[in-house]
Length: 114
Image (cartoon, rainbow, N blue to C red):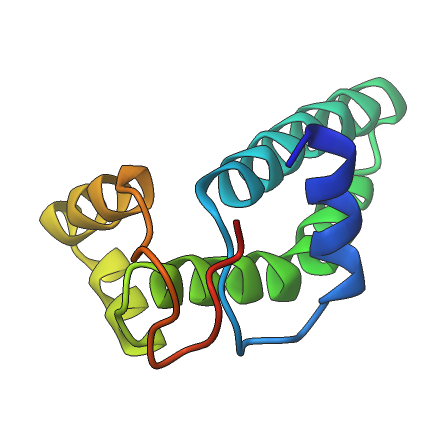
């Protein structure tokens, strides 16, 4: 999956928490969120209003959660593991899991996305 396909998938599955997302989909979406946030913050700093970053953050929050849920499903973990993000060590664990290859073949969350 390339960058454009990942962004398209992220928006077309805006609040779809079921299914699986491959590593490239997750990391390209993460890259898109970082780039969009930087651009929004530059616009905010230029205009001095502070609203663009907030709107972008709110608009990308739900699809980001959905992509994270599908990524966890790809490694055969439930979405409740996302609660680890509230701890420092848990965040490192989630990053490690996001870097792992997904379960080969179908798992309890659906068919292999690749």
